[in-house]
Amino acid sequence: MNLPRADSGAVPARGRGLLVVGDVVTDVVALHGSPLVHGTDTAARIRSVPGGAGANVACWAVRSGCREVALLARAGAESADWHREALERAGVRALLAVDDEVATATVIALVDASAERTFLTDSGAVLRLAAEDFAPSMLDGMGWLHLSGYLLFAATSRAAALLALRTALERGVPVSVDPASAGFLAELGPKRFLEYAEGAELLLPNADEARLLTGLPEPAEAAAELSRTFPRVVVTLGGGGAVVAAGGRVTGRVG
Image (cartoon, rainbow, N blue to C red; front, side, top):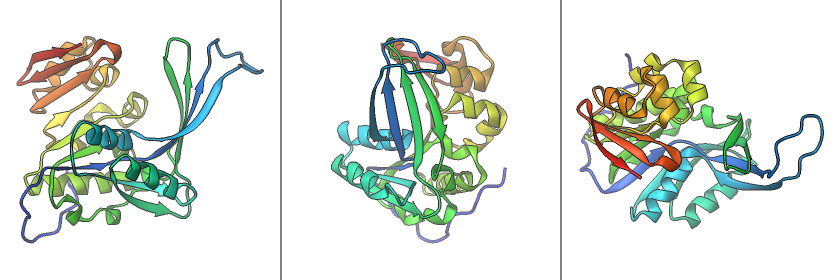
């Protein structure tokens, strides 16, 4: 696999910070207590909130005690300031590339009475994150890089993600990857995704994504199989916690 080359030169010492290369999304959340009725109205509580897989990771990292967290993402001009302000209030350094042509990604999340979520996704500016939006200096002082798998699903954003991955590996900075979407993962194909994620220290799929990546029905089996490729794997199970695997076997369970 041919990855974009990182800049050459002196390699700064690793720090303790976290760089997330991912996404910001405008989430339109609709909570409906009764099933959707086709062709007419269904009562719901609706609100718009800043979100995105990458933004969520960055904000939770701050809340978990990481003192230096930065997020690189691309947002549309119409809401870039809103997202930047929300991230900075949460303690995240927002490295937002502003897109003047395409709006910020928008997700309509339909949440039923059991809290099951169904998503309608307009990727917008997310998949337009470009290699030139990333600078190797963004890794200065960072001890970890986290990549949102959404970026691997389109050529332009994939080039940016792989450049960040390659730069981190050359500097000895470990990388984690979240596959992010079972639907998009199925379209891309498990083999291609695993090739793109090569070199990551930690893979963080949910149960559906782990099944797709391995063809194995049980999350624990899938976690063990994936840990033959990645040093550490954590398969999340929603309310059921998570399965941890390393070296081809399950090493722990949470929840």
